Amino acid sequence: MIQIIQQYGLAYLGWDGYNISGLAMTLWLLVVSCGVGFCIALPLAIARNARSPFVWVPVWLYTFIFRGTPLYVQLLLIYSGVYGLDFIHNTAPFNEFFRQAINCTLLSFALNTGAYTTEIFAGAIRETSHGEVDAARAFGMSRVTLYRRIVIPSALRRALPVYSNEVILMLHATTLAFTATVPDILKVANDAYSATYDPFDSFILAAVIYLCVSFALIFAFRRAERHFLAFLQP
Amino acid sequence: MFDLGGYGPQLASGTLTTIELSLLSLAVSFLLGLIGASAKLSKNRAIKGAATVYTTIIRGVPDLVLMLLIFYSLQIWINDFTDWLGNITNNSYSWQLDPFTSGVITLGFIYGAYFTETFRGAFLAVPKGQLEAARAFGMRPFLVFRRVLFPQMMRYALPGLANNWQVILKATALVSIIGLSDVVKAAQSAGEATFRTFYFISLAGAVYLVLTMLSNGALLLLERKYAIGVRRAVL
Image 1 (cartoon, chains in turn green, red):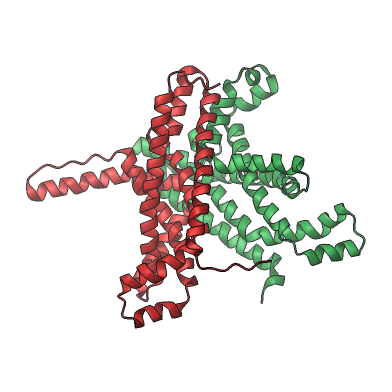
Image 2 (tube, rainbow over the protein chains, first blue to last red):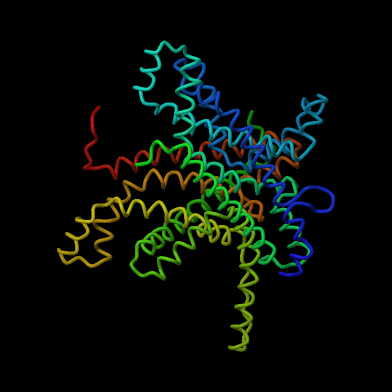
């Protein structure tokens, strides 16, 4: 155990000598995929509640497909499937983008968490109490103002507990990045295991780091809930 | 359209493996969940503490990390155990763990923690008076569980169970990383051999979509069964 910490401690936390790795890489994956996922999800959640089926059916199809298949399959599809298509191979910008493992990983993670987040936000928007909307209309707010001032802030607050769950599940899902050779915590642990043949110590170190990050996230979201949902407290 | 390039049988047996793995893991985690929930609601502090540690740690650590940890370590522990057994009995034993068994054990162990939380909530939702009435009838604890607690708590637990089942079904894809030839692995090797990775991986995705839809249908039937005798508010 001590030998592994001495040899791989820095790699577990953030620097393997050449690139960022381990914890720093995992956090980068988490922040980018959740950030992009959030930006995808907000407009799609509004579209998901649209009245016209031409708007909500495509969004429903997107969330259905990405929530109905394993993230590992999506990652494989984007990482090894898409690059094999002639059309991608022959178009310079696509070729450049899909050649990098990290881009493929981030894209598949963002699309996946975007689908889950869309459904979470769409549910929260659907549950907006009709009184709030009626009052906003009575004030003469336009649709855009109504969404900007009333529906979205209120829905995001109410979605916070469920969204925090999704972020923690996403943290757990970032471990898949190691199958695409991205040097996250699990990749470092796997390297340590291959070098030392000591699976328990190598992986338990990774497990402890993930556990700490999970607890830190839970703590941060609790604080955020206490702040943003203060009006719901008894 | 469906040109499988001769890989149809592999894909079919991979799909079968995925289904078997998910169902067996579901059974293991279901049982572990029932035990864990009873432990969490027990009055004994040590038992309650152990169950809390179990659910907290398992739910805080990614499933893939636990899977690799258990898969690689379990074989070493088994070897140590069989060596020790061989030493004291002067025989030699060996037991090789295949990916399927360790997949079932790890998935069951991991999702048992999630089921524990689901069942704990559902146990608490059954009115206490009913359990007391059952005890007053002279039923033994197991009979109380079988006749009164279980049928009623299943109604509360079903949405959570459905969710967990979908997660298990998708988590079985991870087991291909430790070498099990499930539908993902079959699609991968078919794709590599025919240079049509995109097509075959999409096919694997479609298999999961169909399984998800089928289980949604089955769930609707179960929901109807456990909702017998419950009056819904008509709005």
